Length: 254
Image (cartoon, rainbow, N blue to C red; front, top):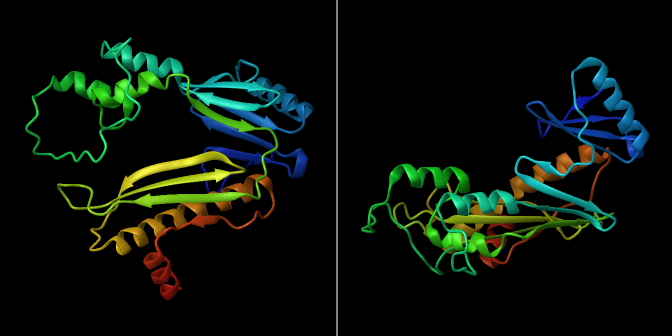
């Protein structure tokens, strides 16, 4: 049908250019279709139905446990029902709420002396949360059931900003640091991650420099993918770096 697979995101396919562009996201046998021209979208769906046994579920409202709400003001994403299922799994529906997911400055170690828990049940919770599952996190989840992300109509995609932060030797077992990144397009959060650095940093400057490398790599990927989806170049990504030593080191390396 003349689609081209994205060079930067394997599950995204693009057809056409400008306002006539049609984008399709594929996950196994489910498709998300978007485009500025409704007639083009309908024509694509009709063509697909001729080739495959497919169902048209209409406007996107649920996908991969993400609830989607669309109105005149934009698109909102949240996971209220999924979060409720996690709480029900651990019998914590109606629990006391926490305003933060973990205790401040909490350091966890593999050599914990805490009371042992049911490993099977614990692993089920980890599978649901995909992060370290503890009751405080569940109490935090209970307090943010209706939280989500909102994407307003026609955001200014020229405002592409990346933020990051890192600690120093935060992992008490390996002494490795952790990097956290956030990317905003037009003031809307589009990408975020928290990951342990692969090498040990000997100073806060090194930890921040490694984090700067991480956010720069992700920024390049996002910039290239956005340019590919839009069919044109986009403005450079502004990276917010708050460590003068890391900035000086980056300039020296450049």
